[in-house]
Image (cartoon, rainbow, N blue to C red; front, side, top):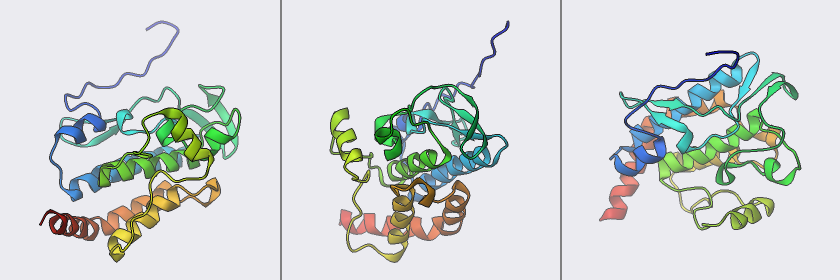
Length: 215
């Protein structure tokens, strides 16, 4: 291998989550389980020492293995944090990531770098896309429009009205992930706790709503 190291990932025929969700027929429980697996993976990395921040979380950077489980990949923008606010190793000199999944502070602040909180923001966007099949800022196809909305304080999606308690609580979690104040966002551990405890009742409620809309 020589003087330079490399990260090697297994090849999975299912491809990325973006591809997998586009062609697979999944129940809401399946979708919630895959989101939970991503959350659990990031909870491990965020709880590790030194803390590992991914920096570019999105469905394209999550693989689905041969047994149907989520695997986080593409750590090209990852950074190590020895303490919150103290960086031990950084692979980028400025903020990076994909615009639809970028936290506001990465767009607004010059030379801002990914943090645990910006990862949580992106995880909320992934939850939106995995569970509700809605891309962040779905109404825009051009980058400058997305960035304009982010700078204007608009969230990745608008909360629907007249939600059941279960679905309303799910939206509470997404909106908490998108809080404009990074320190107010939940931890990955708390998100794991929520999904672990409410995924069955939430999936049942989402299936019920889908059945009603299809009638």
